[in-house]
Image 1 (cartoon, protein in one colour):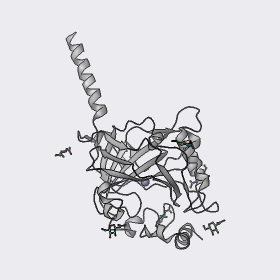
Image 2 (cartoon, protein in one colour):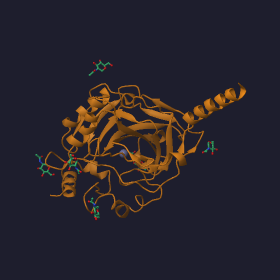
Image 3 (tube, rainbow, N blue to C red):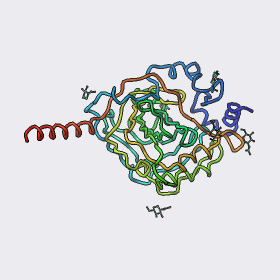
Image 4 (cartoon, helix red, strand yellow):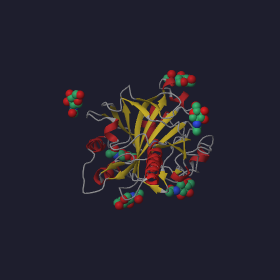
Length: 307
Ligand SMILES: *[C@@H]1O[C@H](CO)[C@@H](O)[C@H](O)[C@H]1NC(C)=O
Ligand SMILES: *[C@@H]1O[C@H](CO)[C@@H](O)[C@H](O)[C@H]1NC(C)=O
Ligand SMILES: *[C@@H]1O[C@H](CO)[C@@H](O)[C@H](O)[C@H]1NC(C)=O
Ligand SMILES: *[C@@H]1O[C@H](CO)[C@@H](O)[C@H](O)[C@H]1NC(C)=O
Ligand SMILES: *[C@@H]1O[C@H](CO)[C@@H](O)[C@H](O)[C@H]1NC(C)=O
Ligand SMILES: *[C@@H]1O[C@H](CO)[C@@H](O)[C@H](O)[C@H]1NC(C)=O
Ligand SMILES: [Zn+2]
């Protein structure tokens, strides 16, 4: 049985509810269902004109002073609830109470889940967004839904700003590190506990979202209006891609592409689970870093000019 057949069988036998979420079957690498076929399979969305992911060209990103800092509620509490192997990624749901506002978003959004995209080990990068043409080893997506929809994703995907997604680019931690950061190491230890597609397990360790993004200044980010990066590709996402990367040690990055199988250990490993780049879109950027720098430079220029 091929990959698609296997996925279809699992869908039919194991979890019709899970599969009912996606109107079509899709995949990353098999003929007939890979991302080159999505625009014809879901023409109303995947063939649209604000599709994600994109390459972000930093020099073309206009500064928007409306892109203020975020208020991130319960990013500092142990909010991870359940980790699920979806057959295409692993995703983690949250206890209620995670939310974000500010950051130029039109209102408040509640945390729904996070999931990951990866390549094939740290040397074959698999982030979805690229910055100035560079693809990173992995990308963490934290997905939030506009609070007014009370968790109803049907309503959210019908709104051009119904979802707010955070993209964090993962980079290999320099030096001779293993098992770092600790929260990532613990998270990756769950992968072997959900070996088969549709397996789920409660997250019993104390991990906060902030623990997963150490060292990231969340005031520095790119913003554009795009889409879901998987079918049905709904154009309902306010994207925030952070400029600072998350540094994760090589052994932890490698685990994702070495431990997660498409259906079970007799099927292929989940690797390169990212969508190809879509055409460029208008990107804006928060101004914090640039402003501080140019103000500092201005002060220096004045001082030098005076003395
Ligand atoms: C693994 O999945 C395949 C379908 O991909 C299935 O035919 C096989 O029975 C499964 N093996 C186990 C041990 O569950
Ligand atoms: C993707 O699907 C298309 C259309 O079926 C096929 O021509 C192409 O070979 C596939 N690519 C891969 C990598 O499977
Ligand atoms: C910033 O927000 C104001 C008020 O909502 C709006 O009028 C203005 O167009 C926004 N600026 C940009 C660059 O989007
Ligand atoms: C992923 O990397 C492993 C080890 O380098 C290699 O054996 C395998 O063929 C790669 N898989 C794909 C799909 O490229
Ligand atoms: C979500 O909203 C849709 C459209 O308004 C509605 O038909 C559906 O019943 C709602 N679902 C839930 C679970 O409330
Ligand atoms: C998690 O934190 C709680 C208190 O907040 C503590 O009682 C519990 O032992 C911790 N669990 C682990 C696995 O560290
Ligand atoms: Zn994603």
